[in-house]
Image (tube, rainbow, N blue to C red; front, top):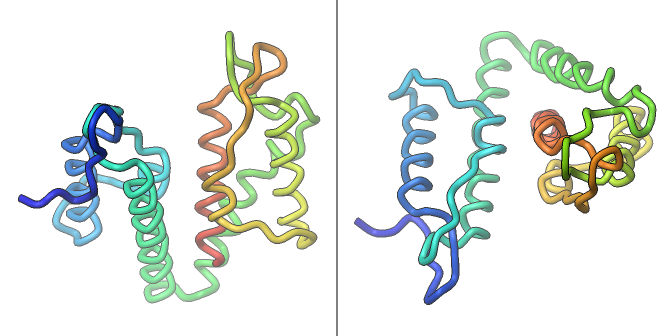
Length: 181
């Protein structure tokens, strides 16, 4: 069987090929309706694979995950619009966006829980949140592609936010932006 992606050479590390292939096979089955096991946008956005020597090129896999995520959101949109109409899709996106508002309205430094040790820099996460507020207010253009590649410097304790909470929040933002793009 041919490899799905390019394998890194020599001592370089990449994503575990078996894990990647299992994930993409499962995604294909769900997308095609062969499997009733759930797989949603957030599962794709937050997929994690072990990093091993000789694994798949991480950039290639990440790009494929982005395309897969796009396809799942597009399919959801197509299904909703076909069965319930464009207004229903707009309502779904509005509800998803509204789910972000309470956190966006919290004061700086209090938008997410603080980790016990290390997490993401409060200053940088709050700046992203400010940009999302400006986006929702129609004052700034933000794309799903921009959110997908956002990174935050590491910080410690009270100067940091919990990474998992921030990652889930960013994933919701990507989902919303994909739905309107």
